[in-house]
Length: 319
Image 1 (spheres, rainbow, N blue to C red):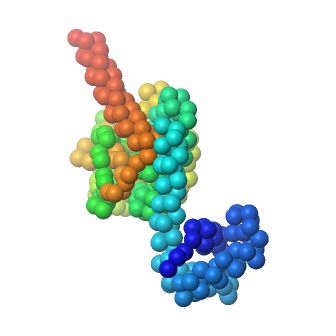
Image 2 (image 1 turned 180 degrees about the vertical axis):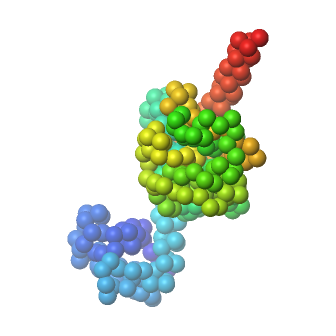
Image 3 (image 1 turned 180 degrees about the horizontal axis):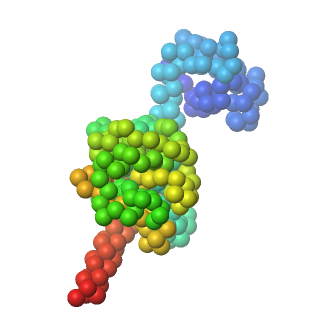
């Protein structure tokens, strides 16, 4: 079966947009050309790929299976294209990075800024999604690698731990629990929480930490889709939330938020870099991967030293 990359691109566009006209606009082709190409593809395969009785079009069972194949082949063609271009330009080219929302918002920007300053010929694309979806993108070749904080890293991908991180319970300094020396599990069960919209990375994170703590009956008072929105609600005293420590370190330092002290609750996590087992990086991807990994590890070591120095200073003041 000889299927051209042109037909695959057309199939992927129709799959994404759900009709011929929108796919044609995205591909800068005529609607009739797109329709003809899909008919040619179905004729070559010998199976119908779309249910066309309703809008948007739905994939048939054969179409759903073919979609994965089309993505993999298209991504491999794109990778070959990128590698050939990179041969002539050294450390230039595109790098596609996946990250969960907290990492994309609070860890990556400064690192990427340093990376592109040092290597201005590299173009970075950051895809923000929940961990499960990022793993799918890595498998399909949609992204080169991902940065996540998963509890159970996938076994069919190469998973490299980069740094030990932690979550924390945070609230306004005026919140009643902020006055407690240690917040107990019972006290946490009886407060309202601020969380992300259902299914978002933050919502998953709150559930994960509270489940691990054995806290199952709790009230979600407000759901909001952004981390900055969560923080603003906490400033206003709307409740307690769970956030990665790196996402609130500035607010804690400035005393806008308080990190609640807890006992008997595992708040540890690990920052992982995830990529395909058979990944063959372009020079640009290898450079970006090494740069990000080194930067994260260096930043964590610097933070540890700063915390150690702060503790020593506090001890010296007490004595």
